[in-house]
Length: 252
Image (cartoon, rainbow, N blue to C red; front, side, top):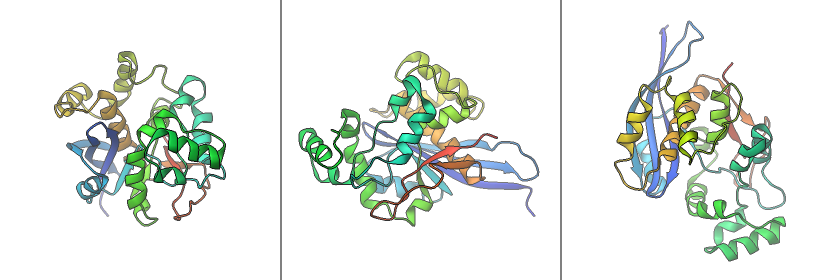
């Protein structure tokens, strides 16, 4: 029997240029409870989500910061509600409600908000509308089979788990917020500051996009070795048969 588990994982976050993708090899010692050791293999910017899938075909698991599985409008996703309760306080607002499936057919914010209000009684937030195109890309491609390899995460939930189940104190768009997240990631990835400097060379990739993709890589590694759970524990299925869930790392 091999003394090590060797596998490859990916972390993906949306950026202005499309999708920022981090791919790493991971090593897990079978005989100990030691954490995975990660080595970054590539950092790249993909255009459409089809390119993300083609670039990550060798990955055991790919974790993406995007809603997968959408409500038809009868009720909000339980995973979003659960994640907000876990984070609490100021960080709860970082988990904004995923748009309902009927919103995917509209193109402008006014029309989308009208559809959302008609079905759910709530208008769509600007944050949700700004990523609607990316949500549509993923929803068009996602199937229950593909979801076994491509899973939804929320970076703030992953950072919460990495931070001994305590939410971040500052927003990630602030320098102080990026520093506290970099501090958590530094023991996992050898030089996070250098990684960010290298990854930002392509235009339209923000530092927080990179940090979110890196924590998604870590989450994928934890899940691959069985150290993750879903929010909620028993997720519901959407009309396509997709699980409406957020993958949450388990650091025990």
